[in-house]
Image 1 (cartoon, rainbow over the protein chains, first blue to last red):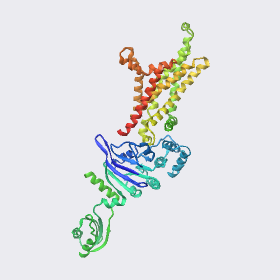
Image 2 (image 1 turned 30 degrees about the horizontal axis):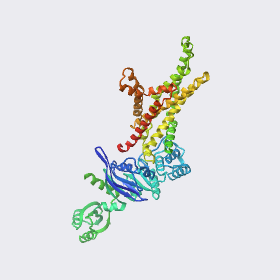
Image 3 (image 1 turned 90 degrees about the horizontal axis):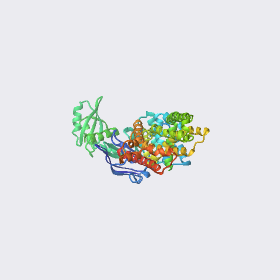
Image 4 (image 1 turned 135 degrees about the horizontal axis):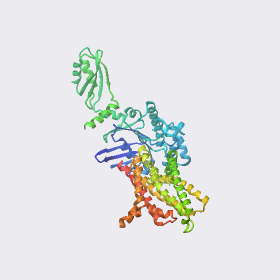
Length: 315
Length: 254
């Protein structure tokens, strides 16, 4: 549905987006993740034909953003970071105006305005001035305008920024509800959001693509070594235990995470591709200690993300 | 065409739901009312003076209507920057320009729509002068044709300044900047022909030709000269063309 091939956006003196490529399939929700200033908004603006890339190409539903911008725009609904609202308009009037801009007319326009108002929960304020709305309502009106022409692709730039927790929750539910019909790209720097909503993640940092993968794949792939947590019950000091574990073949690092009553909790990192659970268990038992827990530790997306963007920064 | 009307409608509405339209119309009503009053008063005073009757009866068109129409041209110098300064600057500041640019409409449709909206606002303001002048018909029988051409001239000249203002409004996010630049450029275009007072070389002639006043005078006399119409239409088209290009340039500069 969306195909981005090697796009860059250069300004005199700095490069906002540097040779990014990725693809999004129909019906997917993709999280566009990166620290502030990573180039998320720039990439989205290129996809929405707000600005052309300096090099590279992007197609939406088969139409090139440079050659066929009108066709692309017809198929995209876009919610910029600040919803593009006219404060002096009433909500229904505003949605009607946007609908007309997107090419709707007559009964169909009226029908769509009613439908999206219902869907985005703004029907109760349809006669209110936009300037009088709360931030949450404004955001929902922004979403309503993005979907008014029932676009194939929805591009949402930080749709939950600046909302209170309840509003964030409502907005996320709303976006999840839109998932089936639309292909959605949503940018954010809030990690749990991506974990909750998205099927795939595209991570960029400093204008460069760092990773693009499914949620699960990302967690597995990004951590070259597996981490195993184990609790050892013993009367001895932690030092000898740690040493013993470190000597197990395939183990790259042992970290003492916690000192428990009569035992310790370690996190053991292994080299890529080595399964060390059995060896670890044997080593502990042979030393005469009790092994009470042995489990894989999964990294939170947050850790993956920090790891990715940190290596990028130090590179 | 449909898109142009959509944008135009929205512009007109935004003038009239905000205090801008009413404030401008009120200010204009007071100032132009004063100018009309002065012109009529002057006319009455002179008409009682026997020495001015020597060349035949005094002409209302000549003594009242023409000066009033010329004065409107001057007031418009001040009003038009206030009409155009928000056109693009406001949308750029609030971010709504992103909505317009990412909608499936062409850049020139946005520009022409906005310009037409501003022109409609200006026409509403001018209609107040029509009210002032219509009073003259109650007490005399002035020729209506110079009035009609005068209005055509005012609209054309206003259209020029509006398209220049639209362009300048598109070059900045700051409404005050947009207004100030438009005022400066309008004033310069108004006074270009002052050169001819002391210079007669080719440059002076070119600048004099570019002066808005020189072309306006004919309209206020009741003459529609195709040369003047062509001049105004060219300036309008040039202004709108520049606005469209600068809207496009937002993309590669932004």
